[in-house]
Image (tube, rainbow, N blue to C red; front, top):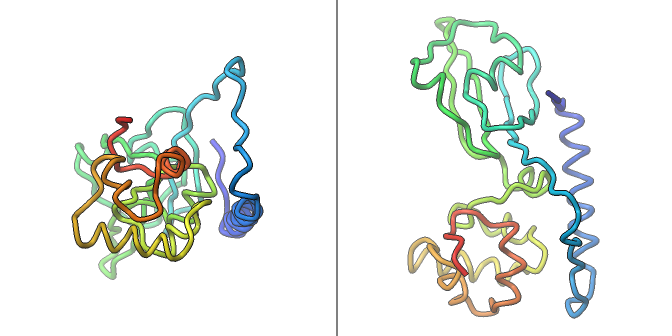
Amino acid sequence: MRSFCRGQQIVLLAIGLTVVAVNLKRPLHSPVPLRARSEPQAQPQWVVEITGPVAHPGIYTFNKPPSLSQALQQAGPIPTQHFLSPMARLERLKNGTRVRAMSSPDGSCRITSSPMETKKMLVLGIPFDVNEAETQDLALVPGISHGLARRIVALRDSSGPFKTWDDLRKVKGVGPMKIETFREFFGGIENTP
C-alpha cells in the first residue's frame, strides 16, 4: 500500500489544482477527448485518508473497500488505547473517507470518519457529493463558475437535495452538456440518464 505524507499531499493538491486551472482556460467549444474503448480499464482504487496520532498519517489506496481496521493497520499503530466495537472494526469505508484519530486526556483514542476535503477528492479523481459541497468547492469543478456554483447551492438550499440529474438541470445555466461533464465529478445523484 502507498501512503503520502502531508508535504506530498500538498504537492499533489497543487498539481491537481494546476491541472484544473489549465483545463478551465480551454475554450468551451472544444470537445473533450474521449478514451478509446479498446483501452484496458484500470482496476478501481479505494482511497482513504488517515489523520491524527498514528505512526504514518497519510492517504492510502486499496484494491477493494477496506474495513476500518484494515485502514488503521496500514497507518501503523495508534499510540493510545482505542476501543472499536466488532461491528465498527468490520465496517467498510467508502471511497474518499477521512479517518481521524483523536487522543483524549484519559489516554484513550476516539476514531471518527467523514468525507475527505473536496479539493483532495478532485485531485484524486473521486466523485464528491454535490448535496454537501459548498460554493467554493463547486467552483473548483471545470465548467462551474462562482456564479453557477452559487445558483446550484441556492437551489439545493431552497428545494432540497438533488436526487436525479434532472433536478440539477433546474439550475439556470445547466444543460445536457454540462450534466455530462459533471457526472465524473459529482456523486450523491442517482445514475439514471
